[in-house]
Length: 320
Image (cartoon, rainbow, N blue to C red):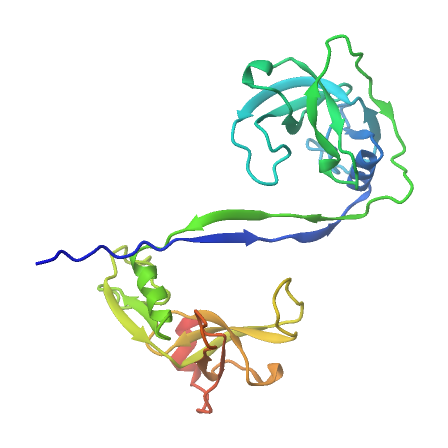
């Protein structure tokens, strides 16, 4: 008898990112524009403390603060940690130290990278200076990093600054991104395998009998493992929905379109999917829909109306 081979362990790279555009108030606008011009600005709080980077509201009194000051481009390391394996898009491609630097004239420290040959070259209390980027656009990356400075380099005092610059930076795109390798467990591996055959597989809780789709391997309500696999759908009912009017980056779908929660027949909770094959303003709660698969697709491209009468509210009200 030949022993059964273990199931293949699935792995895939996964990227979660959410770049968003934000406008800047007068304080943050002045700070980032100043970096573009090679000037570091802070703000003075009600008790006379100089904060760099500047904030718009006093952390003690919560009052709005606008008193900008210019501080030095040299400073002192207050604490640090060595980064021996830089990740993509970090300030430096070679090993470096993360440092908190209190710039001359400031009372708080700024976090950035320190270019140093090794951890033995870094110490709390060491003097450092700003290394400006070759091209500056009005972003924190205009400070390329810090670099060691001589002990004799003179410090600076905070001096008042108007915060006025030509062509001020008024908005930025804030990048948020997480790259990792995802490996589904037993339950989701079965779910993914089912999708490859255009089937939707859930798992039933042996205690409350709710069928979870996608399956989670355990019932979050009862706290017991789920092993009884159940094929649900393929048709389902729209329980609730939203109309999307803003086109997402890299998504080739014309707006407006409808994204809905769909309770597949036999499932104990709704999953989400796009509704097509019907004008967006005709989508409604209770609409009966079925999946539409594209050739080679790994999941339904969208759901379309089945032509059946709408489901009664009492049938799906617990799944909203």
